[in-house]
Amino acid sequence: MKTGLRTIDLTLAGMFVGLMAVGANITSFVPFLVIGGVPITLQTFFAILAGAILGSRLGAITMAVYAFAGLAGAPVFSKFGGGFASLLSPTFGFILSFIVTAYVTGKLIEKKKSVPVYITAALIGMVINYVFGTNWMYMAYKLWFTAPEGFTYHLAWLWMAVPLPKDIILSVFAGLMAHRLEHRVFASSQFRKMTRAA
Image (cartoon, rainbow, N blue to C red; front, side, top):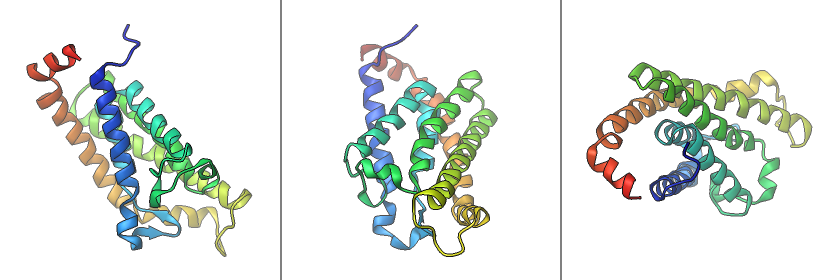
């Protein structure tokens, strides 16, 4: 049973941590992509892709590294945020959910590597992200963060309806992309030789 991480694993994990940071900060360049305090980012897309490409174990580890890097102060969260105070943010639940999203997406794909499974796993990963993140946001606004006037559980989900079409499309795209990479790149003899060398 493989327990350690190879050089290629660390390289891919580092790449996805970087992609998560980039995906989180699109709103820094396009400020109007913040709806009701919720930034519309590419993080869900990259979290799903990490699980689909890296697998459940490495995908979850990668998302955990991303979360811990941000909590340690690295400016990798939305709007180049970071630091331990991020735990109190209404949107921190989405960051935590990326760990579960990557794990579940990868786990489902490990069972059967077909196009329908890739797409289904990606969509399930997206649902996990939405359910965990939205409920955290609701609790944050109700328990420890100043809620907008008239804020309700229903309103929290209405906010999430804004990025939903984008995330559905990107989730399907992530599933298709991961399947293509698996069969065209990672399954190639050249890549296998490189990973054995690593």
